[in-house]
Image (cartoon, rainbow, N blue to C red; front, side, top):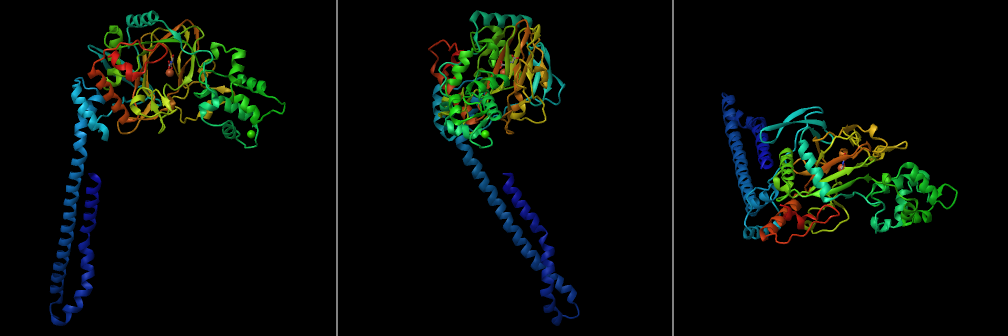
Length: 524
Ligand code: OGA
Ligand code: CA
Ligand code: FE2
């Protein structure tokens, strides 16, 4: 509404200076006419004539613009009216769906509202985001009745906070015991089974990949180029899981080479891209310390019927993040992780970047799209320390508050900043695990309009190697689709399922976070 009104008023303003221009112009025309007839008093008549002509045209101009302005305003009112009418039907379900108002609408109403939703959900919810102010800033937060906690800003990039005493000793004990009762599984298997061929996963031919990696385009891969490419592959989802040091890579490169010229031909590269690479790793045996992550974990449901401590924890997380409870309720269950002595988790992002093709795991079914760009869309990570680690096990943020973020600078001169077994001491920030403390950060920036925006690359973090004792942590991830429409549609789908009644009670999948559209309503 502001733009057209502003345009009109700007036009009006420009017209308001016109009388002077008009007067100057008329003076030349009027003077020759008046001089012969009334020579004695030319100066009095001329200004009279001039001013009447001038003020009439000025009046006309003002009237024209006044009418244009009125028409503009009416047109805008019509525009707003017609755009809001279908949205009004959606406003209540979408507001409820996304903000999670406690009162659930009746099933038949939902059906009615869904049919109107084809045109899209009106965006009427703005996600609050906490303010960091500056590093070291301490603010009081109210997370439970009758108690306040102190929350300290640890970094601004990513926006990261620490809250000591978030959990009591007793609560830490209960969470660990519940996890033990449920049983923990290896967070990562040695060599992923059933791994499709590298080239199939990338959807590019060996030639195409070779060409991309052949940086100097001489038809051969020099050692430097090959090392770089191997490093990229190990950090990509393609070879997800196997962590190779620069020395390992050199070894593999040398092992794969057929001729002693120090170059890798396309043929040799094909070998590398095929399962020969996998077989090589299997033959050598991959130690657990060589994996991206060496830990065990399990998932604990926090919905209705779960242990009171788990439900309390979820409530506290909702108050801490100030997000609508429906968003927290529909997020992943609590992940409890145990690192034994020697355990680690190399630096990673909890959730991936947002491309136009990106879909979120939790809204996948609502997205009616299939793409290889799937990510967990974990807007926020809340990490709880369930014990104080004897030695090591810090959570490292290698590039927190760095001036710049460049992926290539993470590995320089044989120093890999993402390697939390070796280089935690070079991280910009390390958080010491203290029993009951929670840290939380945003994995995504704001889109500037109250919703989830781009990935915050600075949120890169990992668990340093535990040098003495055991480390217990838990993760609460808040999943939000950066695509507002998809998130709203997903939530509407879940509320429809709830309305239909959740009669089946399948056990959730043991191997990973549950597929949320089907399981989410069961935990609520
Ligand atoms: C994680 C993680 C850090 C830590 O579980 O995703 O980053 O300190 N953990 O254990
Ligand atoms: Ca080359
Ligand atoms: Fe993580």
